[in-house]
Amino acid sequence: MPAGTYDPEVSRGVSFNDIFSVPVSTVYRRENRRIMSFSKVEIAVSDSGQWSTFETVSSSDVDLGVCKSSEGCRLASCSPEEIMNWMGHHKSSPEDIMEGCTQLIRLSSGKPEGHGLVAEAGVLATLVECLALHSMHVAVLEKIIELMCALTLVPAVRGILRSLDGIESVILTMRRNPTHRAIQVEGCTFMANVVFQSSNNKVLTGRVGGITALLRAMRDFPWDVVLQTRACLALRNICWTSEENQILVGEMRGIGFILAALARHAADHTLVEQGMVALCNVSLYCPENRRKLLSTCREKTILTALRLHQNNKVIAEHAIALVTHLVGLDSGFRRQVCLEGGIELILAAMKNFSGDTEVVLKAALLLRHLSTFEESRGAIFRLNGIEALSDALIIALKHDAC
Image (cartoon, rainbow, N blue to C red; front, side, top):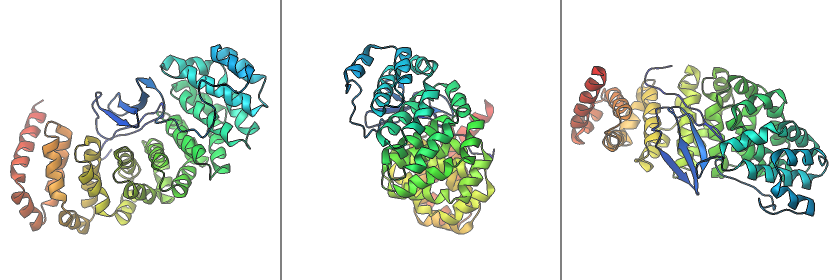
């Protein structure tokens, strides 16, 4: 791992790897959903403390507590085992499968143990089978994948789905329904979850067309901020510690898709967080991708993110990491960062996160790279950067002493 970089990954029960350490207490909010960081390198989506998805997106007209038939109404009081047994006898009915999935989602909601209970009921094989049986019913497909997203919060489920060809089935469903937005959103979320902390699933997902499906969805729904966010999240997880997938994303011009999402949705802090981490995971451990990032990236994209989200530690860390690596590759990029106000933004990050050793030291390292230009040295003096660098020196000495 290159010095001064980090490590990230995430899931829809998700796990997000935050490149640099993210405090366990950090909580980011979006549309009444919470993304909670619970370890140095992972975060999971939570809804009022439950393991859940980023956000439930459904085009179905079936509400969680509402049934369409007298049989379906009885499911509201059934156990997971009873619902699965009922679904096993009604596989050919799209309405019944949809209602069964709806009730299982309800039962697994709000408590981590619920996901395990549902998974143990034998739902996985039935779900994979029903993706093929109901390939013409998009609302049913969406509900099935939504349930699969919830169940992948259970680590064992990720391996079981691989053995059942569940990963291939979801990717095939995305390929067959390229214009159905909800299926694409749920498919992106599924991939983010199913590869989390699973090197085997990462490799398989890349080899059976998962990265292609993600980039196609980003291409076809460029203005859909939810889809773009989840796709970035999936790319973040798929590429973390997987050189093979990093190379695939680079060859498929995935870096450009991430940069385009950052430019289009620059004001959305959730997307920018995921996009920045994805860029780092895709590029910083792969020399060829670093060169591709340099040739594709405009310094304004990264600096705009830093400027619009100055109080967001995750974005600040990752933006500084990206700029640090890029200025080391090209003097022209270094000069442009200075001309575009990069010095001021870096010093602002050092001030805003003065209590965070990682941010301060990484920002100081970046200023050292930039100070090879006379204009940069003048800007550092003019903006009282000497004081900030002095503080960074004290922090570094204390850090070494510890």
